[in-house]
Image (cartoon, rainbow, N blue to C red; front, side, top):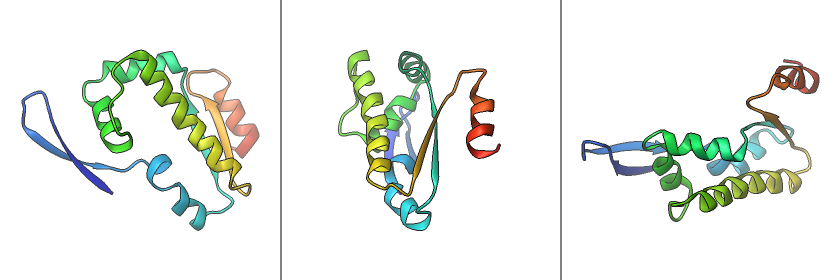
Length: 120
């Protein structure tokens, strides 16, 4: 786990753990569970951008943990979103025993898709 400090709205230092399995643990997860299925709850890119901009601090925390710099406009946020998805897809392609199941987060069909694909 990575630990980062950031300032909150009151300018107090606040420490938090940086751990995102889809960023920090893919290789370890593959070693432990070589036939695993990754379920990616996928949100529309523009909706994701609006959401991450709305919640104060979450964008900074995500970028502190995963990126070299914080994207500061919608074009850079879109590229960050696309790069993350591409990295997951590439990892699964290079580990053919794994499956990536991408499901729409905001859809009436998500439940049926999960039931059909993995029985839940």
